[in-house]
Amino acid sequence: MLTENEIRVLKILSAIEIPLNAGQTIQSWGNEAVSVVCEAALGTYSSLRPKVRNNAVALLG
Image (cartoon, rainbow, N blue to C red; front, side, top):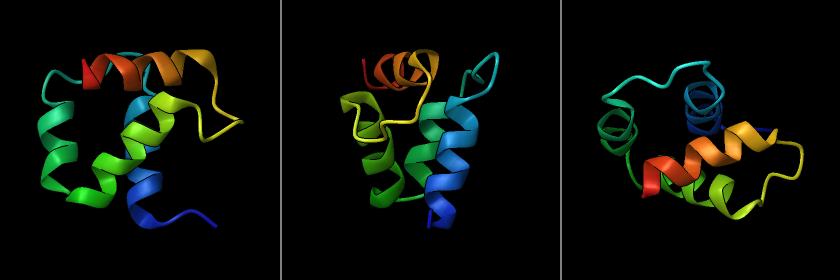
């Protein structure tokens, strides 16, 4: 079962257009939220679409 932070972060990463302040917003949610972005970028969540993973990589870039 996904945590609240995982749901919020994955919702942002799944958006058609990611908000300009998405990185700051996720960072303000704490270390767990940042870890979710890192895990998404690394492909830990196997069910994610490639676009979602690319969005995570772009946020980390």
